[in-house]
Image: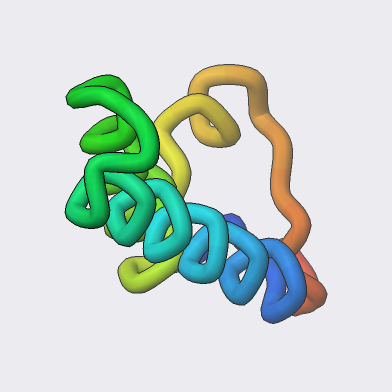
Length: 64
């Protein structure tokens, strides 16, 4: 798994994931908020399977 997410992308994913999980835990939104686990994990690991499928990358490192 090669990193395909840049720093801002990763940060936004982590924040969005934590927000969704937090809203679920406080019962503000329903169980659908657990979908926040997906952006949280992709942000932590820096790899997005959807980016890989479509050949996208927001990572600033040069491709060889």
